[in-house]
Amino acid sequence: MDALSDVLKTIRLDGAIYVDAEFTAPWCINARYGFAHIRERLPQADHLLFFHFLVEGRCKVRLADGADAIEAQAGDLILFAKDEKHLMGSDLAWPAMLVDEIAARHDAQASSMQSLRLGGGGETTKFVCSYLVCSRAVYRPLLEALPRVVRIPVGDGPAASVVRELLRAGVSESSASRPGADSMLAKLAELLFIEAMRRYVDTLPPEGQGWLAGVRDPQVGHALALLHADPSKPWTVDDLARQVALSRSALADRFTSLVGESPIQYLVRWRLALAAQALRTTGESLARIAGRAGYESEAAFSRAFKREFTLPPAAWRKAQSRAE
Image (tube, rainbow, N blue to C red; front, side, top):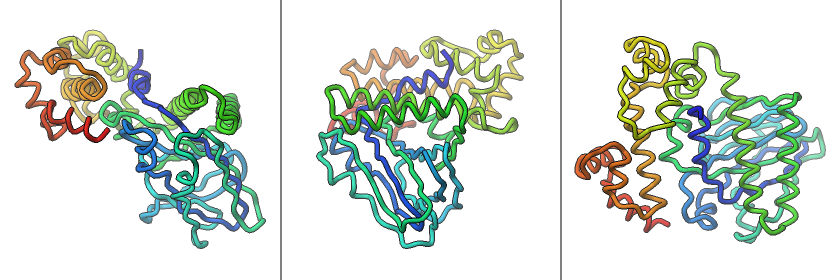
């Protein structure tokens, strides 16, 4: 399994709500789904990603803190790496309508379709919105590699047809409230996000850096896949270099240049992320989790975990339990 697939499989999607929006120019919204609302429905929610897919028309999008605007058109997916307030509209100088609380007007347990209609009767823009819930600790490599907001052009080809079919199915499930709808919506959102990430990787410039650039690189991507496939193995850079047919120094330099840390530093952080996931979602003993993370003693594991997550593992587990 490649590293991207390995990280993506850790996504926890406990319920994605699809919002069907149709606005006519001039219009502008100040939008945010609201992580507090997610925590009401999903107490174990840890991190939220939010996206809009433009089905028709065009608009401008920017973060509310004054970042540069992005020009989006039909076939574009706008992804926010976390739940941040943003402006979206035909004219961002137009008085913005607040929509933060729209989701809260619906029954927290319902899967009913949410529809937004707004505008002055001019050019029509249609888009569908949804969110994904994931583990921030395990998802760290990808979250750190993504811009705060990114436009992913899906276009009009076969991939766009797949995305539109997924969205059509999501809209149908959101409005029908049939048994199993939450699970279906979660899977549809996951498929949509995976397709978006694959498209985003394809658009990265050849000279790009970061975890996603490392995933795309033949040798570094192979090394990442090996680390993800067997994180408990006592890997060395020499082992990885032999597997990917590079010298030790060449792999170390290329890996560090692209990913931003050495192969062993990356492995240590990935093991700790998996340990955090286990602490949060299982009742396994600290000794067992420490051993799987490559530590012979709980004390050494505790010190390393505290460096990464501020709290020692036992206290971190209790804090997570209280929050949930």
